[in-house]
Image (cartoon, rainbow, N blue to C red):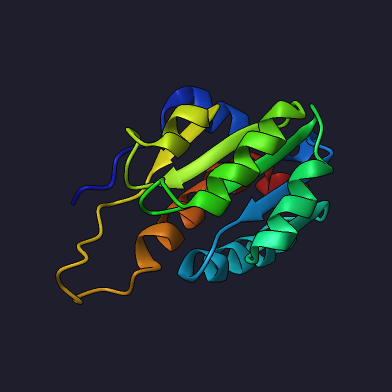
Length: 154
């Protein structure tokens, strides 16, 4: 019930993911699992110039290799994970675009981002739903936006 629609500027960017040279998805912990799933889904959509990182050293390595026609997708429910923020800052300094998925737009990650997808809030006090579910829901929404335009291409 608290899933917000993706704004039109972000949706328009998502429709053109195939125009990018490279897409890197980063996340730590459970967000790293979502990063792996996101890359798998992108492959199913025909997006193969991708990579992911779920460890700080690989995030650093990939961030340093990015340039102005690349995208870094940052996954962090809090929007404050140190390693994800550091990677986003380095990638942005190299000219890459930043698309973040987080439950807090008013966060360090939200401020760095060129594009932002708000994940549904996740309560840390209850355990009624998996911690990765809000992120996976957003990943599926992104894939559906891309897929809607490109279905006839596949």
